[in-house]
Image (cartoon, rainbow over all chains, first blue to last red; front, top):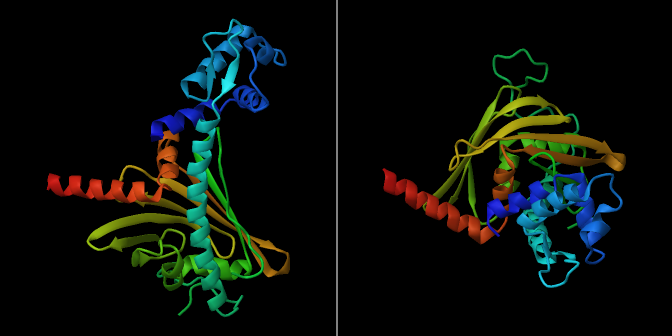
Length: 127
Length: 161
C-alpha cells in the first residue's frame, strides 16, 4: 500500500461517525439504512461518509444484491496495522538498547544534564 | 531482558498528524533523561544496531542543537535539529529533520514521568507536517523498503551533482 493510500485511510478515519461505522461493520455487512439508523443525519450524509470510506478502500459495496450491503475490507485495515506494528517494533528495539544502557550506568540521581550550557546563566552549568 | 517487560506502545491520532510512543523504564527520570542528553550514552542506543552512529554535535540544552549521522558502508544518513526546551528530568522539546528530506521537520516532545518504584514513563509525541508525511514515516518501518529508498535517493542526488 503506497503512502498516499495509507494517508487516505487515516483521513477517512479522522471523522468520528466514519470510525463508528467502521467499528459497526466489523460485526458484519450492513445496508446504508442500517448504518444511518443510530445517527441524527440524513441517509445522503451517510452515503457521503461511505463514499469516503470506499475511496480509501476501507469498505466495498456489492453490485449484485439489491440491498447493496456495505462490506468492511479487513485486509486494508490489517495492512495499516502491520505498518504501524513494524514501526512500533523498531521503537521497541531501540528502547531495549536503552534498557541496556540504563542498566550499565550507575545510579546517580544527582546527575546534572550532561552538556554544560556555555555562556548561559543556568544553574545546571557544571564543569 | 529483565523479568519486567514494558512493551512500547504506539498510536497515530486520526485528527492530527501525530505519532505517540509510550514506554516505561526500570530507572529514574533523572537516569532516563541523562541517557537522552549525554551524547556518549545517546550513541549507544539511538541508532539502529546495523548502522554505525556518529554524533557530529549534540548540545542538549534550551537553544542547543544536534546533528548525527548513520553510516552503512558508503551510505550516510544525516539527521539534525534544535533543542527548543530542555528541562532536566522533565521534558525535551526538539525538532527533527532527515537531511534527505530537508523540507520535512517533526516537532518532538519527550516527557519523563516519575512512576512508583523509581521507574519512568517516557512519552514521545512527534508532530509532522502532514498526514502524507506521517504515512511515509510509518511506512518507513518497512525496513528494507526504506533502505532501498534511501539508496535510490542517494543515487539520484549523486546524479544531480
